[in-house]
Length: 466
Image 1 (cartoon, rainbow, N blue to C red):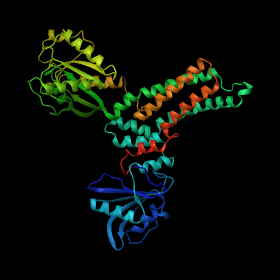
Image 2: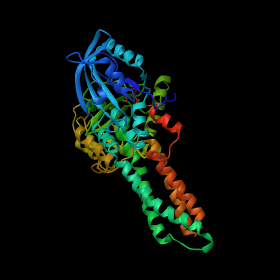
Image 3: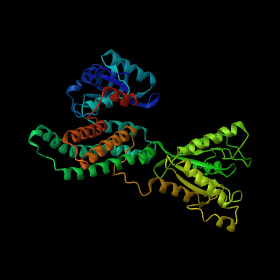
């Protein structure tokens, strides 16, 4: 659905739908103050022209429909351009009855407002240059954040950290692009305004920066959506017991009968500020059972798209050579996702020292007892270490948006062409063309370059009140 006329005054429920103690209704647009003033009465019963009130002030009173009092409310007044959307805004804090919410919305619509569409408030903030496109997208990420890590990354981006990085890249590239373009204007004189050695250094620096930003998406995507951790192993290796231990909850059925888990079970939990999405899978074995075989097939699908694979094995049921062979197979399956495969010797409480020691030759093997929760804390620390490699620095830019990653990868391709062109001494017009493409793709990130379809696709995913 296309967003309506941006000159309209729009209204929407800003808080989640449903009964609550308080609800907030937001109006934005040129008629926000006249519409609200017509329905608002101060505590003494007098009318008040909100347009004459100072910005960022609160006003207690009542919303009325003729002589009928609808509710006691608190009005917040924000004047353009210093508001969220850059327009005049009134926010009405009312009691959270669904009936009251709907009645107030209908009153505002009767007075000339129209119901806002998804993301329309934030789109207006973008169009009025209160936010750039990357910051606007970070608003949605901040609302959806379910862990400290996702919250930190979204907040850093909303404050303009990522946008500033992109602006620096564009400014540096624009400087040289202008010199190259100037050369084209004086092509007959055969002069060079842009030093090719300096341009090579710049392109090398920009390419390195852009590739690093694109690579950070792997971590950013995991922080935003949860780290997919597959718990794999033979039937009865203790996978479901480990899942329950990690979640501190009896989520999965635990039984001594092999093949109890026929399908994948997924649960999320935040650990150390990072959301982990644990996936308990069907035991890996050859089986004639149709249902169990489908579960095994799904297990391999989950493994191939995971970030971490915890391969559990029972030392009483497997030999070191068999475990090593399985680990090699799992490493091959996860080659595309570059997942970390962690071998985990389970049921250490039931194994003797000699049995445990026989597996010490397996690289990075961890010894635990899921049932007794022995060393499960160390396993969690290993997972955190695997994800971050080192302590995550939230002051550095971490890309979380797939659209941004795609734009960065396209920019890198453009810069590689510029780099190749400089090495082969191509003419300025070819260099200029590739630099323009790099600037175009960088501009897509922050909205210097945008299309109606792109904006519609982004803002339609927002909730209505934002």
